[in-house]
Amino acid sequence: MDFNTEKLEVPLSLDLAQQRFLLQCSDEIFSEKEKTKEALLKTVISKKMVPLYLSLCDEFKWVKDEDLITRLKAENEEELKKLDDAISDAQKNLGENEVREALLAKADFFARIASKDEALTAYRVAAEKTVALGQKLDIVFGCLRIGLFWLDADVVSRNLEKAKSLIDEGGDWERRNRLKVYEATWLMAIRNFKKAAELYLDSIATFTAYELFSYNTFIFYAVLTSVVSLDRVTLHDKVVEAPEILAVISDIPFLAQLLNSLYGCQYRDFLDALASITPHLKADRYLCRHTRFFLREVRIVALSQFLESYQSVTLSSMAAAFGVSVEFLDKELSRFIASGRMNCKIDKVGGVVETTRPDSKNALYQATIRQGDLLLNRIQKLSRVINV
Image 1 (cartoon, rainbow, N blue to C red):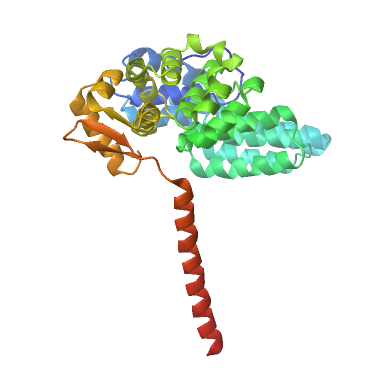
Image 2: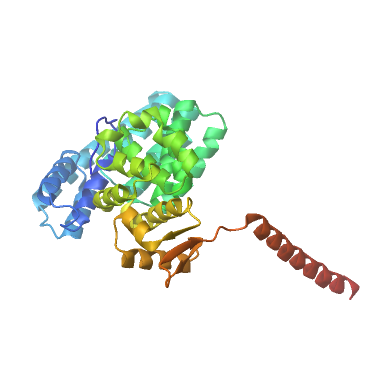
């Protein structure tokens, strides 16, 4: 899936990671592998990405071009020597700013050739010579892109914390908003859709993180994380009626149908859109691992929304509304009820679904009683210990 319309040049493009992922997908999910392989290799060779080239050859059993490897390594060594000479010259003859720029150029070089560990080390060295808060944040963003490229949880987590700390010291609004997109993307990748949706929606009007993905892809992520995590009122106010989303959602296949059919209670159209958008989820490197979870959760949202209007409803009429068989709906509801995800029960004899709305006040009262009993027990144990 590619909705890219605008790009920001960075040393390490995340598009390469997506292309690599597409080559890992089955032919059923993605069939244009030869074209993607050709584009990926063209970029890898033009940027002299020897570490990535070797990794790709090992993963996909491609024949290694030893002459090419030798030539690219020699060119990289020559470029690295020039960078080291520039650093040495800056340290001897120039000021701190020039030294920082030379160190940063070396870090960008390692990032460009996808040499992960060397790039992270070089960025840390450059950060030690950096005083300006904005420049420190830019270095952290570079480390975050490396972490997202390799989906390295440790690298991303550590640098997100570092970025938040720097932002708290007085980061500008542009970098603050970019950080929200970086964090939301990682939260989505680790299945925290609710928090990801909040951060994405906060960034809609000020999105500038084109180094991660295009604006259309950003809207795709924002809508998907929202439909599965936001309540109906919030979804209407922040997504369905959001002018920034309305401006581009029609350009993204099946997304408008998914959103509008869910909000408009057109459940048959909703399931059609869900089936159509599923291949796009499976072809996305951040969402692929969560496809089954997303499909389950968004179906629970739709089923619960339907039942919200009824005290009881026949299985046949509910099945007709969703465009599925009674048997399928019965099996679907039974699974969700058994797991405690839906507040209803099925009268199999009468062919009726009855809603059992939770009594929140009574539940809160019972929880308070249980916590009070637990506290009293602990106090009694403590008093016995003190008396002894």
